[in-house]
Amino acid sequence: MADLPSDRDVLMDILAFHLEAGVDVALGEEPVDRFAESAAEVRTAGAAPGRPRPAAAAAASSALPPPPAPPPSAMPAPAGRGMPARPPAAPAETGAPPPPDIAALDARAAAASAANLDSLRVLLEGFDGCPLKATATRLVFADGNPQARIMFVGEAPGREEDIEGKPFVGRSGKLLDRMMAAIGLDRGSAYIANVVPWRPPGNRTPTPQETAICLPFIRRQIELVNPDVLVCLGGPSAQTLLGITDGITKARGRWLDYQTGRRSIAALATFHPAYLLRTPLGKRMVWRDFLAIRRRLEETRNGRM
Ligand code: URA
Image (cartoon, rainbow, N blue to C red):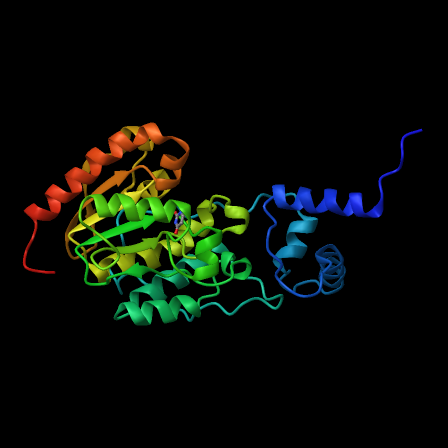
Protein backbone atom coordinates (compact mmCIF):
# COMPACT_ATOMS: atom_id res chain seq x y z
CA MET A 1 0.00 0.00 0.00
CA ALA A 2 1.30 3.48 -0.85
CA ASP A 3 2.40 5.65 2.08
CA LEU A 4 -0.05 8.36 3.07
CA PRO A 5 1.37 11.87 2.53
CA SER A 6 2.65 13.49 5.71
CA ASP A 7 1.10 16.70 7.06
CA ARG A 8 4.20 18.49 5.84
CA ASP A 9 3.72 17.15 2.28
CA VAL A 10 0.09 18.25 2.31
CA LEU A 11 1.02 21.72 3.57
CA MET A 12 3.77 22.05 0.95
CA ASP A 13 1.26 21.07 -1.75
CA ILE A 14 -1.20 23.69 -0.53
CA LEU A 15 1.53 26.33 -0.48
CA ALA A 16 2.65 25.38 -4.00
CA PHE A 17 -0.96 25.57 -5.17
CA HIS A 18 -1.32 29.05 -3.65
CA LEU A 19 1.90 30.26 -5.27
CA GLU A 20 0.79 28.99 -8.68
CA ALA A 21 -2.54 30.75 -8.18
CA GLY A 22 -0.66 33.99 -7.53
CA VAL A 23 -1.09 34.14 -3.76
CA ASP A 24 2.45 35.12 -2.88
CA VAL A 25 2.08 37.72 -0.14
CA ALA A 26 0.75 37.53 3.39
CA LEU A 27 -1.60 40.42 4.12
CA GLY A 28 -1.66 39.98 7.88
CA GLU A 29 -0.14 38.07 10.76
CA GLU A 30 -3.25 35.96 11.39
CA PRO A 31 -5.34 34.03 8.83
CA VAL A 32 -8.91 35.27 8.31
CA ASP A 33 -11.74 32.91 7.37
CA ARG A 34 -13.55 34.99 4.69
CA PHE A 35 -16.04 32.17 4.02
CA ALA A 36 -17.23 32.32 7.63
CA GLU A 37 -17.47 36.14 7.37
CA SER A 38 -19.56 35.98 4.19
CA ALA A 39 -21.85 33.34 5.66
CA ALA A 40 -22.43 35.54 8.73
CA GLU A 41 -23.14 38.55 6.47
CA VAL A 42 -25.67 36.56 4.46
CA ARG A 43 -27.44 35.59 7.68
CA THR A 44 -27.44 39.24 8.93
CA ALA A 45 -28.66 40.58 5.58
CA GLY A 46 -31.47 38.02 5.54
CA ALA A 47 -32.55 39.09 9.03
CA ALA A 48 -32.71 42.80 8.20
CA PRO A 49 -34.59 43.34 4.94
CA GLY A 50 -34.17 46.76 3.35
CA ARG A 51 -30.57 47.22 4.51
CA PRO A 52 -28.03 47.42 1.68
CA ARG A 53 -26.22 44.12 1.49
CA PRO A 54 -22.43 44.01 1.73
CA ALA A 55 -20.80 43.11 -1.57
CA ALA A 56 -19.42 39.80 -0.30
CA ALA A 57 -22.82 38.70 0.95
CA ALA A 58 -24.48 39.77 -2.28
CA ALA A 59 -21.93 37.83 -4.30
CA ALA A 60 -22.34 34.76 -2.11
CA SER A 61 -26.11 34.62 -2.50
CA SER A 62 -26.68 35.97 -6.00
CA ALA A 63 -26.10 34.40 -9.38
CA LEU A 64 -26.19 37.81 -11.11
CA PRO A 65 -22.96 38.88 -12.82
CA PRO A 66 -21.25 42.03 -11.52
CA PRO A 67 -22.18 45.33 -13.24
CA PRO A 68 -20.23 45.94 -16.47
CA ALA A 69 -17.06 47.99 -16.25
CA PRO A 70 -17.26 51.57 -17.43
CA PRO A 71 -15.27 51.51 -20.68
CA PRO A 72 -12.07 53.53 -20.43
CA SER A 73 -12.53 56.39 -22.87
CA ALA A 74 -9.67 57.31 -25.14
CA MET A 75 -10.22 61.01 -24.51
CA PRO A 76 -9.70 62.32 -21.02
CA ALA A 77 -12.56 64.40 -19.64
CA PRO A 78 -11.53 68.01 -19.22
CA ALA A 79 -10.59 68.53 -15.60
CA GLY A 80 -13.38 69.86 -13.42
CA ARG A 81 -16.13 69.69 -16.06
CA GLY A 82 -19.00 67.25 -16.11
CA MET A 83 -18.08 66.17 -12.60
CA PRO A 84 -20.99 65.07 -10.46
CA ALA A 85 -21.27 67.05 -7.23
CA ARG A 86 -20.99 64.26 -4.74
CA PRO A 87 -18.59 63.63 -1.88
CA PRO A 88 -16.16 60.69 -2.19
CA ALA A 89 -17.92 57.45 -1.38
CA ALA A 90 -17.21 56.27 2.14
CA PRO A 91 -16.02 52.66 2.28
CA ALA A 92 -18.92 50.33 2.93
CA GLU A 93 -19.49 48.97 6.41
CA THR A 94 -17.46 45.91 5.48
CA GLY A 95 -14.44 48.04 4.57
CA ALA A 96 -14.94 46.97 0.96
CA PRO A 97 -14.18 49.59 -1.72
CA PRO A 98 -17.19 51.29 -3.37
CA PRO A 99 -18.70 49.76 -6.54
CA PRO A 100 -16.46 50.27 -9.60
CA ASP A 101 -18.63 52.91 -11.29
CA ILE A 102 -18.77 55.02 -8.11
CA ALA A 103 -15.04 54.51 -7.54
CA ALA A 104 -14.28 55.66 -11.11
CA LEU A 105 -16.32 58.84 -10.55
CA ASP A 106 -14.52 59.46 -7.28
CA ALA A 107 -11.19 58.91 -9.04
CA ARG A 108 -12.09 61.49 -11.68
CA ALA A 109 -13.05 64.07 -9.09
CA ALA A 110 -9.94 63.39 -7.00
CA ALA A 111 -7.54 63.41 -9.96
CA ALA A 112 -9.03 66.62 -11.36
CA SER A 113 -8.53 68.33 -8.01
CA ALA A 114 -4.76 67.67 -7.97
CA ALA A 115 -2.92 70.89 -8.71
CA ASN A 116 0.48 69.23 -8.98
CA LEU A 117 2.21 65.85 -8.88
CA ASP A 118 2.80 65.94 -5.14
CA SER A 119 -0.85 66.46 -4.41
CA LEU A 120 -1.79 63.78 -6.97
CA ARG A 121 0.44 61.34 -5.11
CA VAL A 122 -1.13 62.30 -1.77
CA LEU A 123 -4.62 61.90 -3.24
CA LEU A 124 -3.73 58.48 -4.61
CA GLU A 125 -2.25 57.44 -1.26
CA GLY A 126 -5.60 58.25 0.35
CA PHE A 127 -7.80 56.80 -2.39
CA ASP A 128 -9.56 53.59 -1.35
CA GLY A 129 -11.61 53.04 -4.50
CA CYS A 130 -9.32 50.51 -6.15
CA PRO A 131 -9.37 47.05 -4.56
CA LEU A 132 -5.74 46.50 -5.59
CA LYS A 133 -4.64 48.91 -2.88
CA ALA A 134 -5.68 46.36 -0.25
CA THR A 135 -3.42 43.63 -1.58
CA ALA A 136 -0.44 45.74 -2.69
CA THR A 137 2.34 46.56 -0.27
CA ARG A 138 2.49 50.19 -1.31
CA LEU A 139 1.65 52.73 -3.98
CA VAL A 140 4.07 52.78 -6.92
CA PHE A 141 3.63 56.32 -8.16
CA ALA A 142 6.53 57.21 -10.44
CA ASP A 143 10.24 57.45 -10.91
CA GLY A 144 12.43 59.82 -12.85
CA ASN A 145 12.31 63.51 -13.59
CA PRO A 146 8.90 65.26 -13.51
CA GLN A 147 10.39 67.95 -15.80
CA ALA A 148 11.37 65.37 -18.42
CA ARG A 149 10.32 65.76 -22.05
CA ILE A 150 9.57 62.06 -22.32
CA MET A 151 7.26 59.88 -20.24
CA PHE A 152 7.10 56.07 -20.31
CA VAL A 153 3.94 54.34 -19.05
CA GLY A 154 3.77 50.62 -18.29
CA GLU A 155 0.87 48.45 -17.22
CA ALA A 156 1.19 47.85 -13.47
CA PRO A 157 3.94 47.25 -10.92
CA GLY A 158 5.34 43.79 -10.35
CA ARG A 159 6.80 42.22 -7.23
CA GLU A 160 10.07 44.19 -7.06
CA GLU A 161 8.27 47.46 -7.78
CA ASP A 162 5.75 46.68 -5.03
CA ILE A 163 8.61 46.15 -2.59
CA GLU A 164 10.62 49.22 -3.60
CA GLY A 165 7.74 51.57 -4.40
CA LYS A 166 9.25 52.54 -7.76
CA PRO A 167 8.19 51.52 -11.27
CA PHE A 168 10.37 49.34 -13.46
CA VAL A 169 13.06 48.30 -10.99
CA GLY A 170 12.90 44.53 -11.64
CA ARG A 171 14.30 42.62 -14.60
CA SER A 172 12.17 44.41 -17.17
CA GLY A 173 13.11 47.72 -15.55
CA LYS A 174 16.80 46.94 -15.99
CA LEU A 175 16.13 46.27 -19.66
CA LEU A 176 14.16 49.51 -19.94
CA ASP A 177 17.16 51.34 -18.44
CA ARG A 178 19.41 49.82 -21.13
CA MET A 179 16.94 50.69 -23.88
CA MET A 180 16.77 54.29 -22.65
CA ALA A 181 20.56 54.49 -22.35
CA ALA A 182 20.85 53.43 -26.00
CA ILE A 183 19.25 56.74 -27.01
CA GLY A 184 20.95 58.84 -24.36
CA LEU A 185 18.18 58.78 -21.74
CA ASP A 186 18.17 57.81 -18.09
CA ARG A 187 15.94 58.34 -15.07
CA GLY A 188 17.21 61.89 -14.81
CA SER A 189 15.88 62.75 -18.25
CA ALA A 190 12.76 60.57 -18.39
CA TYR A 191 9.66 60.11 -16.22
CA ILE A 192 8.24 56.62 -15.65
CA ALA A 193 4.84 55.53 -14.35
CA ASN A 194 2.18 52.85 -14.79
CA VAL A 195 -1.50 52.90 -15.77
CA VAL A 196 -2.28 51.06 -12.52
CA PRO A 197 -0.15 52.15 -9.54
CA TRP A 198 -0.77 49.13 -7.29
CA ARG A 199 0.56 45.64 -7.93
CA PRO A 200 -2.15 43.14 -8.89
CA PRO A 201 -1.75 39.99 -6.75
CA GLY A 202 0.53 37.44 -8.35
CA ASN A 203 1.25 39.92 -11.19
CA ARG A 204 -2.06 39.09 -12.82
CA THR A 205 -3.42 41.45 -15.47
CA PRO A 206 -5.47 44.27 -13.92
CA THR A 207 -9.20 43.84 -14.56
CA PRO A 208 -11.02 46.35 -16.81
CA GLN A 209 -12.72 47.73 -13.67
CA GLU A 210 -9.40 48.25 -11.88
CA THR A 211 -7.94 49.92 -14.95
CA ALA A 212 -10.97 52.19 -15.39
CA ILE A 213 -10.78 53.26 -11.74
CA CYS A 214 -7.07 54.14 -12.02
CA LEU A 215 -7.34 55.78 -15.43
CA PRO A 216 -8.18 59.34 -14.29
CA PHE A 217 -5.06 59.38 -12.11
CA ILE A 218 -2.61 58.39 -14.85
CA ARG A 219 -4.31 60.84 -17.25
CA ARG A 220 -3.84 63.64 -14.74
CA GLN A 221 -0.25 62.51 -14.15
CA ILE A 222 0.45 62.77 -17.88
CA GLU A 223 -1.22 66.17 -18.00
CA LEU A 224 0.86 67.45 -15.07
CA VAL A 225 4.17 66.09 -16.40
CA ASN A 226 3.18 67.44 -19.81
CA PRO A 227 5.90 65.63 -21.79
CA ASP A 228 6.63 66.21 -25.47
CA VAL A 229 6.67 62.47 -26.09
CA LEU A 230 4.58 59.73 -24.45
CA VAL A 231 5.67 56.11 -24.82
CA CYS A 232 3.22 53.34 -23.96
CA LEU A 233 5.05 50.17 -22.99
CA GLY A 234 3.02 47.16 -24.09
CA GLY A 235 -0.47 46.52 -25.40
CA PRO A 236 -2.48 47.16 -22.21
CA SER A 237 -0.94 50.60 -21.71
CA ALA A 238 -1.45 51.47 -25.40
CA GLN A 239 -5.05 50.22 -25.39
CA THR A 240 -5.90 52.12 -22.23
CA LEU A 241 -4.23 55.42 -23.05
CA LEU A 242 -4.27 55.55 -26.84
CA GLY A 243 -7.45 53.62 -27.52
CA ILE A 244 -5.55 51.20 -29.71
CA THR A 245 -7.64 48.19 -30.62
CA ASP A 246 -5.05 46.43 -32.81
CA GLY A 247 -2.58 44.09 -31.15
CA ILE A 248 0.69 45.67 -30.08
CA THR A 249 2.60 43.95 -32.91
CA LYS A 250 0.51 45.91 -35.42
CA ALA A 251 0.14 49.11 -33.41
CA ARG A 252 3.75 49.62 -32.30
CA GLY A 253 5.95 52.17 -33.99
CA ARG A 254 3.09 54.40 -35.24
CA TRP A 255 2.92 57.98 -34.01
CA LEU A 256 -0.45 58.97 -32.56
CA ASP A 257 -1.79 62.04 -30.79
CA TYR A 258 -2.60 61.81 -27.12
CA GLN A 259 -4.99 64.58 -26.06
CA THR A 260 -4.63 65.87 -22.53
CA GLY A 261 -7.59 68.21 -22.94
CA ARG A 262 -5.17 71.13 -23.20
CA ARG A 263 -2.71 69.94 -25.80
CA SER A 264 -1.79 67.11 -28.07
CA ILE A 265 1.24 64.98 -27.21
CA ALA A 266 3.12 62.79 -29.69
CA ALA A 267 2.56 59.24 -28.50
CA LEU A 268 4.03 55.92 -29.55
CA ALA A 269 3.39 52.36 -28.44
CA THR A 270 6.18 49.83 -28.34
CA PHE A 271 6.75 46.36 -26.92
CA HIS A 272 6.89 45.98 -23.16
CA PRO A 273 10.40 45.12 -21.90
CA ALA A 274 8.96 42.02 -20.17
CA TYR A 275 7.85 40.79 -23.61
CA LEU A 276 11.36 41.43 -24.95
CA LEU A 277 12.84 39.31 -22.16
CA ARG A 278 10.69 36.43 -23.40
CA THR A 279 11.00 37.27 -27.11
CA PRO A 280 14.45 38.77 -27.81
CA LEU A 281 13.68 38.89 -31.56
CA GLY A 282 11.36 41.83 -30.83
CA LYS A 283 14.36 43.94 -29.82
CA ARG A 284 15.08 44.82 -33.46
CA MET A 285 11.67 46.47 -33.79
CA VAL A 286 11.98 48.23 -30.45
CA TRP A 287 15.36 49.58 -31.51
CA ARG A 288 13.63 51.16 -34.51
CA ASP A 289 10.96 52.61 -32.20
CA PHE A 290 13.59 54.06 -29.90
CA LEU A 291 15.45 55.64 -32.81
CA ALA A 292 12.16 57.24 -33.88
CA ILE A 293 11.68 58.47 -30.31
CA ARG A 294 15.15 60.02 -30.31
CA ARG A 295 14.44 61.75 -33.63
CA ARG A 296 11.12 63.07 -32.34
CA LEU A 297 12.77 64.42 -29.19
CA GLU A 298 15.36 66.21 -31.30
CA GLU A 299 12.71 67.65 -33.60
CA THR A 300 10.51 68.89 -30.77
CA ARG A 301 13.32 70.23 -28.62
CA ASN A 302 11.99 73.52 -27.36
CA GLY A 303 14.42 74.65 -24.76
CA ARG A 304 13.11 72.48 -21.89
CA MET A 305 15.97 70.39 -20.41
N1 URA B 1 5.92 46.08 -15.61
C1 URA B 1 5.20 47.21 -15.68
O1 URA B 1 4.32 47.37 -16.53
N2 URA B 1 5.49 48.15 -14.82
C2 URA B 1 6.43 48.06 -13.89
O2 URA B 1 6.62 49.01 -13.11
C3 URA B 1 7.18 46.87 -13.85
C4 URA B 1 6.92 45.89 -14.72
